Image 1 (spheres, helix red, strand yellow):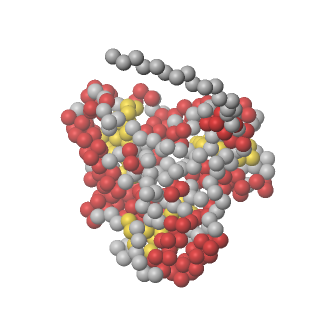
Image 2: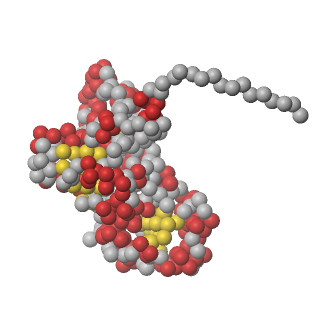
Image 3: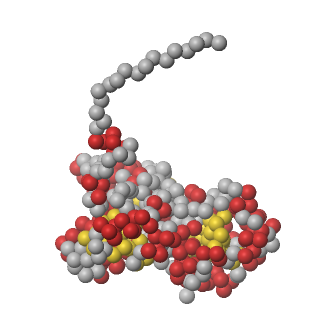
Length: 397
């Protein structure tokens, strides 16, 4: 055995920088509490050449192209959108423009799939960056959900279960829902979808966002937290016993939104202490304890309408994606409405922000030159069953 000697480290006269201390968690940066801005913010909007190129390509395409912009997109992209909205509104808007040969969807993958399902066969849906996915939608795969259904069958309850899938899901999950007699929902009509589902069966399998399912069942429908169980696709039998599945009314998939899931009860308590008289307004994809502590809860469209109707001088802390919160803060600044992000550490939806102006310019210029890029196309069988689930949603009372 050899003896090992270790040299003593020399003392270095190095003073940590404020940034290093911040990253280590030993210091605070007051600029991170500016409401809707943060250190390390996105670079300024892309150079004017790209702006002009986007305008030129869009003008060359004319009525052949229809650009959809989700509320969570950057301003530099939103400026080229023909319509803005949430995912389902945009998909319906696309379906209402049959003369548009190309639908350029500035959103994420599942949204483009929904647009392809609802538009005509002669229309082509384009996603400027194929890497723009959705972490929530990716938390439920077709194979995992099929295995879950086998678990429910073995527990003897599959015939009692009606699947309800959130719009923020892949075409495969929407097709599974349609195949098994279920419906799709949005954050605006989740209560109506669940009311309908419980008229069809005794239990609901809610995919893929556990928080929207729990909040709707408990907050809006009067169920208890004990009525809900969480199915974890990464554990045998979802981590649940057959008895737990039989006793549950709501079987919630273990999925969540990476943005809305970050808000905490501490966020709510801290902002109330920091801004006296603030109104806390959050999206129902937030955790149950956050929703329970908020003053107002609703979809993206609800958040916008609530702020539009708010009196001048009112104060608001918003629990949803930062691009939208910042856009609303700028929009209503002239009315003296103070609007801040609910969490002190602000962040963007990383996947939504993959749609940037360079990608949009590339897509538009390619189409203008006659080259189809990044087409999103759902196969016919999947489309048929997914559309069936969507049509059930549209028929909800």
